[in-house]
Length: 214
Image (cartoon, rainbow, N blue to C red; front, side, top):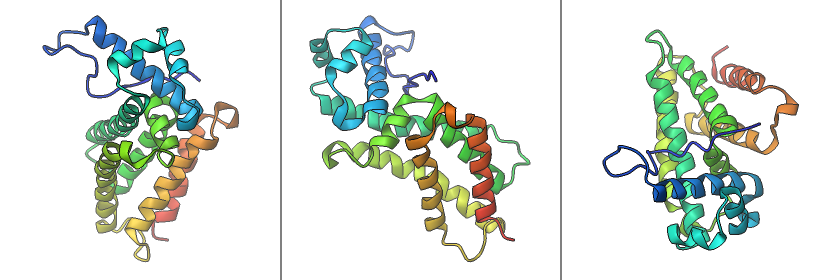
C-alpha cells in the first residue's frame, strides 16, 4: 500500500515560507527516501545507496546534506514521532465538543494506527527501529517520545477523573500496554491481513473494553 512520507514542520521550505528551493526539495527527497527505506529494511539493513536509488540521486550527493548515515537516520527517527504528535494534536483539536475523555482515547488509537501504518513512513521507521539505534542518535527522538507520551497521559488522567477507567488499573501501566499493542502492529500488519479500518475498530474495542469499568 502506498504511503506518503509526511515530513513534519515544513521541512524544506525557504526562510520566507513562500515555497521550496531546489536544494530544500532535494533534502526533503533524501529524508523521504531514507524514511521509506528505514521503515522497510531497518537500521541494520539501511544503506545509503538504497536511499540514493529511491531518491534518484548519486549516493555521494547525500553527504552534501547530511554529514553521515547516522545524522540522516537521527533526523528521520525524530521526525516520525514529531509528525505523529502533531497529527494527534490536530485530531484532538477537531474533536466534537461532546466527545468524552474515552472518546478522545479512541480518537488517539485511530490517529496512532493510521499514522503508523498508512500516513507516514517516518513514523513507521521510528516505531520499528526505536530499540535498534545507538543511544547517541536517539536523544532527540526520546525527548519527542516524552512529549507525545504526555498527550496520552493527559487523556488517561481525564478519562480516569471522569470515571471512564477502572479504579483497579495503574494508569501508567495501562498506557504502556496500549502503546505496546499499537506499536507492535507495525511488525505484523499488511493489507492482506484485513483492512486498516478493521484493525482500528478492533483496537478501539480492545482498548475501550479493557479500560472501562464493568
